[in-house]
Picture 1 (tube, one colour):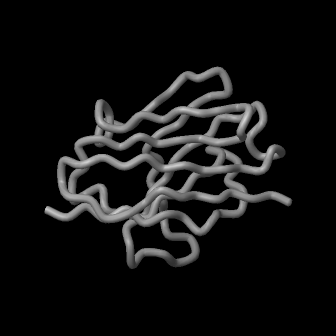
Picture 2 (tube, rainbow, N blue to C red):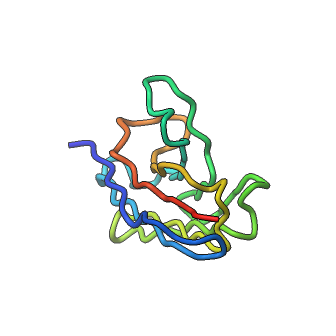
Amino acid sequence: QVQLVESGGGLVQAGGSLRLSCVASRSIFSGKTMGWYRQVPGAQRPGAQRELVAAITSDGTTSYPDAVKERFTISRDNAKNTVYLQMNNLKPEDTAVYYCNVPGLLFKWGQGTLVTVSP
């Protein structure tokens, strides 16, 4: 069964940190680039665009947009079919539902995990 399960979100003050986890089905995870996406709360409608905030190839090469560079770190544990997102120095504008998926393929989305950053 194709599945993506995100966890680790919560409420944190600005400047704080959170670590998100995503466990993927082996058929999704193995040998593929994995990405973390986010979507602003209230915009959860079919077709609404999600923003890619981090990606990691199967051999560990990472990439980030400027908005999160130096604050977010993506990593993966291939033995556990798990991808992580360490988020430091969080800002209110990071508030969103965070999802993982495979860039370019986009399997069925998981439920996401809500990150709320208070001022």
